[in-house]
Length: 235
Picture 1 (cartoon, rainbow, N blue to C red):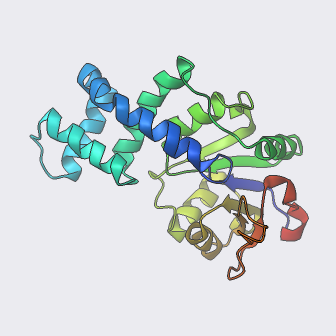
Picture 2: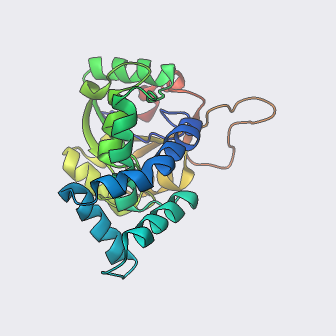
C-alpha cells in the first residue's frame, strides 16, 4: 500500500538538535523563574503548576520548590508534560519578539512543501508541546510552515517509544498504519512505530562519511536528509 500520511519528529529530524539544546532550552531556563513569578496566577499557568505539584506529590509546594523542580527537569532533559507546556509559553515570547527563529533544515522544508502539494497528510509527533511545535514551524527560518500540517501530537498522546502511541495516532489520522511513514532520528521511536504497523525512516544526518557512517545494524531505511527519501520504496 502506498504512503498517504507522513508523521515526523522534530529534534534531529526536521530541526538541528543544537537549536533545541543551545537556543530553546537555555532561553527557557533563563526566563523560567521570572515568567512563573509574573504569571503564576493566570489560569493556564496555574494549571501547569498544579500538575507539577501533583507529580512531586506535594500539593502545597511553594512556588520556589516548583521552580527548582522545573529547573532540575530542564537540566536533566526530562520529558515531563507540564515542563514542556511551560517552556512553550516562554518560547512564545522569544519567537514573537524576534529573539530567535525556529530552525528548519532546507531539505526538510522543501520536501514537506512538495509532499503537501502532492496531497499527502503531514503530521508532527514530538516530545515538545503542541504549542511549541506550532511556534517553531510558524516562526521558522523557512517561513510559516504551519499551513502544511494537518495534526500535531505530543506526550499527551503517549510516550514516543510506545507502540500504543502510534496506534492512537493512526486512529486519529483515520489512516491505516501501513499507509503512514514515521520519520525520526531515534531508533527506539522507529521501533515502536514499526511495531504499530507504520513504515519507518531513520534520519541519520551528518552520516554517510568515513567518520560517521550510516547505521548498519537497523531494520529501518536510513537517509542523510529529506531529499533522499523516495516514498516509492515504502509501497
